[in-house]
Length: 325
Image 1 (cartoon, rainbow, N blue to C red):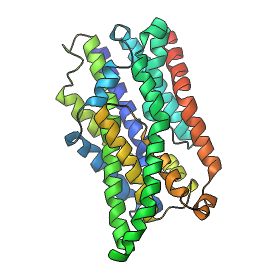
Image 2: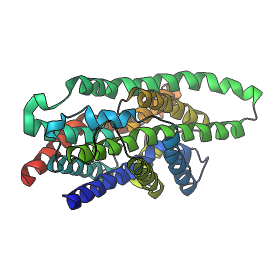
Image 3: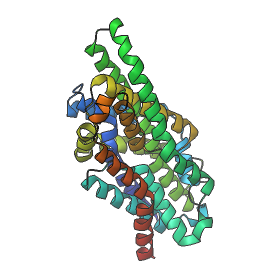
């Protein structure tokens, strides 16, 4: 049994690593697009602040994933393996297609799939899932509105500050906050899965307790994943949605970071991809000229990816679970 647990923990960390390079686009795409940092500098910058989230956020999101999605009686080695594999397959598929999808929602979809396979509708905590489903629409809207307001206000500061240098520093700050929010939200999802596994196998007395080694390993691995880069998706977010400059890039990131920090405190597993795309749309909508330069076809493709994430990951995971059983 111990060997099986070790292999499943490794699989969870593989998902964590893929989450890092899949979602690294969210943390660094705008800062690369605006030429504030070179790509390798941006990756190291984001990875460092991914890890720094360890010192900032409580483990509220980990608690939601570990004990708030699927009832504990349906958590087993087979179900967790299937959920993780379903999420990994979906992530790699969207990465191959250069689509910025949500690793978070892929994992939740995988958990839903194995839960429904075992116990039907009663296997899932629908009160939690309804909040997560609502966040799919509300969180990007929050990021979009804040970015839209900031892109109207911040340029007025230019008369009091040294122009582009000020905006570059501002975007370094916004990117750092976004990376911290990403690390704090996404690394904790893997923690929740590992804790659920340990609890189900009798290695923990309480699902509310997260061992220090689990916390450290998840933050370290997601930072390494981010540092490895996810260039296919970075190219889409950085260059194909709209033309960004340091002021608009900073506003998009501040809007996304605000939504993430709020979700981390509330324990809501949020999609960094969604909130940053909302921020980018917000800065793309502040006047007619910027709207004309926005690639709305790419945005439609991203929205479609959002919609299909839950059901596709659930189907992948349920199919794998059926094969395993």
